[in-house]
Length: 562
Image (tube, rainbow, N blue to C red; front, side):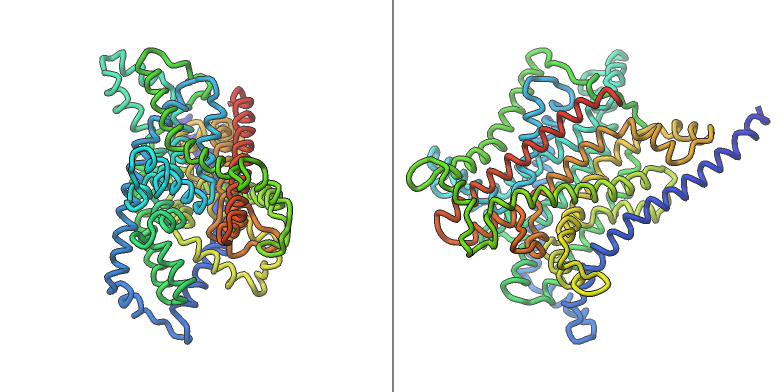
């Protein structure tokens, strides 16, 4: 036995050494990408605000925090993000279970429909919700109820946006959990709820934590929804940064708020990185097609009905209002607004608005490729459980683009990437790079729970047998995570289609994206511009739905390879 151990240990140590070197190599690309296209632009805009005369003015931080209005903004930003996250989890977790465990007609189409709200521009969704809950809206006409003057409109709009985050992130792992583990607990006498609480819930904890983190970061930095539905009463840090930058032109205050936002998000990510590993465990993953089945019994059919009703009221109804307005032309319902998109009036655009479709698809595919490459490398580097504190900090840093003001990033791109050696202002790749910054965290958070759930002994056995780190990844990890990779690519594509905050500052007038085109149309007075904005938003919704539906079909066709 000792001889056998002597023969085995050197290859194992060699494999671990090669694995550590491979992990550092995989980290190099994401570190360089984030350093150049995130840290450098953000640092440039902060320095411009706090170092106007060549000397740092850190005393400005205390002056800003001393303002009661700023403290109120900080408080509202935090508690509405917590409330939005809790409400989203409460409403979306049953949906994650239904999509993961039930097989029903129209499931692929419904999954694509659920994801569509996530990519719609916030200005469009805010307007659609006003039509539902504002003055003269559906609730006002039916029951005389208005929510546009309350925080409930903001919370419901946040659930509308982030429902897909929970369904896809948690449901992606839930669909691959072996149900026999829970069934074994029930055979030993545990109730259905006890078996779920003690077996399934701990296994889902990393995915639930990842989804909650993404929802919190998105709602913590909420901009369009709060600006439209909150009016002058409610304001988040993101809205205040935009106001200080674009309306008051106080770049110093905007820089201070950016630092505060950055520090708050960094603290949240540090706590998340320190706690999530204690909840991770090696899971037995199976083919997702083996776990989904037709609902059984009245309880499961009732759950399916409740989820479908939630999707219809909370997600489909606002989209239906959007479509209805796109056809509601002055002379009656028709295609007048859609036909107007094919003409260039020489005012808002240098090209016909319809060309934004091709531009958006081109940028989205490029951004998806970049996000999958960077995010996949980062997720692979973070897979090992013996990673040190530096690597765990790298895990948290990857999420920072979701928690830093898109306004800051956009202005940072204009300032930092406008001169050699990084003069990219004239290159089309600048927009996909900005979009990929937001897509990378979704790729990492979608793939990482599945990668870490793979039994590490399989990798060790392959390394002992002499497999290189690349072959270990190809033979052990890739077959298990191919489904998660497709989900991650879908998220990155959807995020790229709908990204607005940073893109609006760097998109060229002759190559606007769909969200930028919609925002510019909404910014002009007149029913024609508003109708064209609704028509272009409907096209964006359809393009996203078709792309996601195609992704669902590809993923389903390949499930047999897992």
